[in-house]
Length: 240
Length: 286
Image 1 (tube, rainbow over the protein chains, first blue to last red):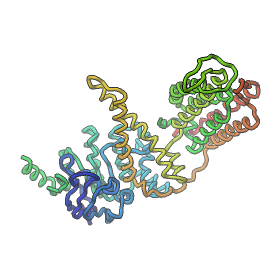
Image 2: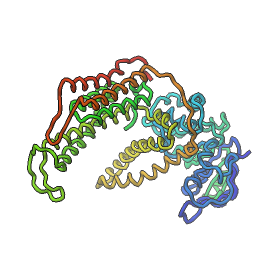
Image 3: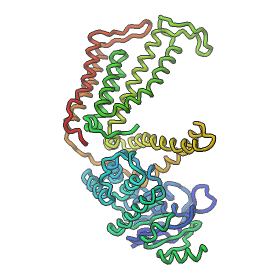
Image 4: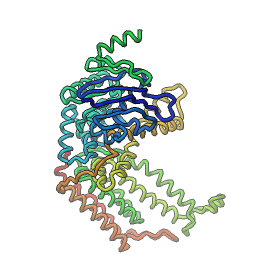
């Protein structure tokens, strides 16, 4: 069963002269770890935005085609509704923390869904243990380092055990060690929890080893969709 | 402007009662113009802050309130036409008219300034000692969206301060340096992007479809009871004092402020009522 299904999706941001996504057809299956590759402005973040519903619901613009995320049609379901199935992690850790304490940050999405206090406490403990951030639970978010902050934001995205995890260059503001730790953590979650992962990353050497599949974008179009080894061959041939 | 987790009775009390306690101190300050009572409230606030381990934070609010107090005194002295004891005759100042500052106007300005200083100090105490996440959890049962909007508005402050530091350092690294105006313009432009990013995060965390949270019942702790009682006592003393006219202060046309035994007793009672909850130190670890 596919978690993300795009059929002829074309999307333009408000006032943009050219579409950010151009007739994209795509299917991502359950449990896959898919890496999105491409230069800046190739459409990676927009594609991730479609997967999390912020495109077009949050940004506006012109959307054509059909997109289905975890069985929900994107025309009917916005990011808030999709958040029950999709966890999202953006680039900047600072703007992804909205509460004062780490515990409250992890509990926030669950409380939004109306979970009972006991269920919230249990889910927070589980996700904290899974991400190795149980020692941070009593800390204030303002005191966290960039890497810790990103882990906490990842925890908030994963707290409701989403089927699909969408990550937009999650390591871009982390040091190399913290970046590698985050990627190995994602691989482990993918294997142990069966979470489908869709990740955009510039530094491909970090995540190709963990990927099941690489989708390369150029000018809003999918130009390569292949396993990592075939992608490397394609990259070698297409950019001498 | 951010919460500091400390092992203190005030931090150990539930946020709603701790916030109520701070509100009672503010109410007491707003109900009187007697300088002795106001000074005692400020003193009580300083002691409470020290006992709660956030003394430095509240002391920093002094730096903020001092220029405000001076401004209030100066403006009131220049604007007010009341009072009989003229201190100086500055003549006609055009749009301001005849400027003859009076002792009464200066005294009234100082009292209003002191009132503001107490309010600022209590607000600093509340922001450092009352868990905003717990406040949000309580208030969202009544009005979730407005509670979260208010919380986020205050949350943007440290984010923008960090941005200001970064942009300022980057600008200073340039040969000619940068004016404050340039840094402010960069931060203002950046603030909108930051706000959009935070809003996007809220969307993907399910904020737009948030449901009313389930009520979590939790028995009252000794600290909850102590601060609840202290809030009632402080508010009660302040209301009783105001209604019974125990601490009268009249500024116009001539100064008439009473500093007697009754006023001293009321001031002492307010300080004691505010500090009593801190005598119980058991169970303050969090």
